[in-house]
Image 1 (spheres, helix red, strand yellow):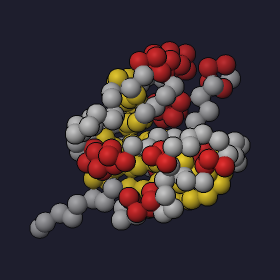
Image 2 (cartoon, rainbow, N blue to C red; image 1 turned 120 degrees about the vertical axis):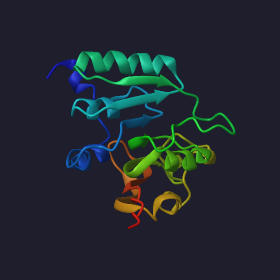
Image 3 (cartoon, rainbow, N blue to C red; image 1 turned 30 degrees about the horizontal axis):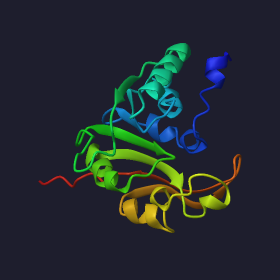
Image 4 (tube, one colour; image 1 turned 120 degrees about the horizontal axis):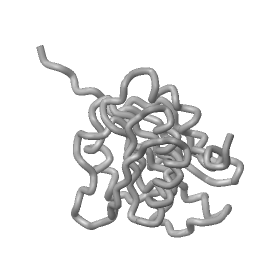
Length: 187
């Protein structure tokens, strides 16, 4: 394994649920939302999935593109301000899956719901209100209240839900892996 491959280190939640991406074709591209260095998106791109990495930081996107090239993965990068008030920054009914890790901007939740195609997959992991005991973030705007993530997506087909403490590093998180319901067809 070369050094760029070892730097990928995707989120364990994504690794644990990789099979959900591979059992049938994705109904659209995978969006790695607020991707940072893109390690989660690159991990899926190495599985021959179409991946779009978006972030506000041009520097992070340049780093993601460089890492993807070093790993032999093909990703598309898009610089997007996900927090522009009153604007949906995501294409609607477009993505086959959306990944969100260590990011919370509550006004974006309806955009995520609209952005996923019916049957699309969502993997979301971010910090809860317990996190300040272990480190950053401390701002309550970036921390989920108890049960909040489940309330946001609990009416979808939930494959996994966890809320509590994870180790290595120690952190307080909520995690959900769910699928947007398919619309019933009329006969």
